[in-house]
Length: 547
Image (cartoon, one colour):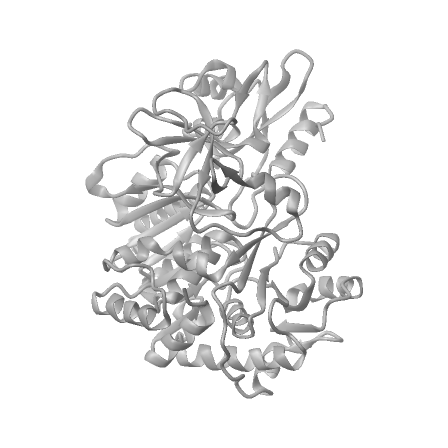
C-alpha cells in the first residue's frame, strides 16, 4: 500500500497543469493552483522542515483555518515522513499548550490572526523548533513567514517512505482532553474502497496502480472538484480531502472565517464543484435558506455541476435532505463515521428512491453492533448495542494506552474500533443510531440519547436548533432538559414543544424543561457543544451540573 506523498507526487507528474487547490470564489480567490505548483511549494516547505531537523515521526501542528496552506503543509510533512496534527483554531492558551505538548510538536504553522496565542504558549512547549506564520503584514518575533520560507528553499529531494507513516487526527470528544487518533497512510487508503468501486477497481497496492486509477477516474468523467465546506481540521473534510487528492481531484475552500451559505453556493457555481462535504443540519439548514433567498430574488444558483453532498458526524434530517433534492437531483451520502473509524454505516438519498428516515443507516461491510458481552445484536430484537467497525482502523490514541484499550477492543479474536455510539438493529438489518453513550441521560432508570430528542424538537416549524442534556434531579436522577433556539419571529410555548416530542417519542424522553437561547453554540464542525448546553441549562434552571 503506498503513502500519500509518493502518490501525490506521481499525480503531479502525470498532469502538472491540472487544478489542485482553490480558495474562495473566483472574484476574490482567482484561478486554482495547479498540481505542479502545489507539489513544488510543498517540496520547498519540506526542505525548510528538513533544515530545522524535522523528519520521520516528528509532529507538525496545523493551527490554521481552511485554505491552500493547510493542504500544502500536510503534503510537506508527508514528504519528510513527518506527522501532520490538526489543531482546533478556537483553542486558547491552555488548550493549545496541552495539544502541542501532547503531540511533541516540532513545528507549528499558524494563521496570523492566531499569532498572539502562539506567542503566549511557545515557551511552554519545549519541543517546538519552528514557528511558521501564514499571512499578515508583520511576522511576530521568533516566527518566519510561510511564503518567505517557501521562496528561500529549493525543493526537497524525494525520498523513500512507508504506508506505516502516520496522520494524526485530534478529537476533542465529549469529555476530557483532546486525543490524537493515529492513522497509518495505508489504512486510510483502504477506507477509499467506495471511491474505487465506482471504476470497478481494487484499492491500489502500488503507486503505479494509484496513478492508473486517476487516469481511469478522469477518463470516465469522474474528476472530483471537492468543496471542503466543513473545517479541514476535523475528520469529515480532513479525511475526504486526503482521499480525493489521492484520486487526482481539486480541493476548494471557503474564504470566510464564519460559515456563509451564500459564499458556499457561489463557489459551487463558479468553481463547478462536483462534491461538497458538510456536517449535517448545522450546514444544511443555512444552505437551504440561502437557496430559498436566491430563488425568491430571481437569481437561483447554478447547481448543475454538483453530483454529491457528503455529511458525517452530526444528524442530517430527512426533511433537509428532501428539501435539497427538490432543488437539485444529486446523491446525498450520509456517512456514519468518526475520528476513530470510517465505514460504520451509510444512508444514501436520491430523488428517485423516495424518502429516508433520519438516523437510519445500512451497516458498512466491516461493521456490526455488539452487546456488552461481545454478541452481535440480533435484528429486530430491540436490544441496544455499540457500533463497531473492523478492518482498516487506526492504531489507537497517541500516548494513551488505557483509552486505546477501551476504544479499540479485541472481541472474538478480531480488533474493532468502538468509539461509543449506540444503536439498535431493525428487522431489515438497518440500524437506528441512538447517539454517543458519554452524553446519554439516565432519567428514572431509562436511558435517553440526546440526539433522538433533538431531532424530534427540530421537526417543529418554530425550532431552529436544539441541544438536550440531563440535569441533576432528586426524583428522576437526571431530568431531560432542552436548550432551544427558535426561527426568527417564531412564537411557541413550552407545553407545545413538549407535546410535539411526546407525539414522536416515548413520553419519558420528552423534555421536562425548555431553556430558550438566541443561538445554539456549536463547534466549527457543526457538532454539539454539550458542555456549553449543560452549563447554560443549569444556570437557567438554578442547579449545579454534575461534573
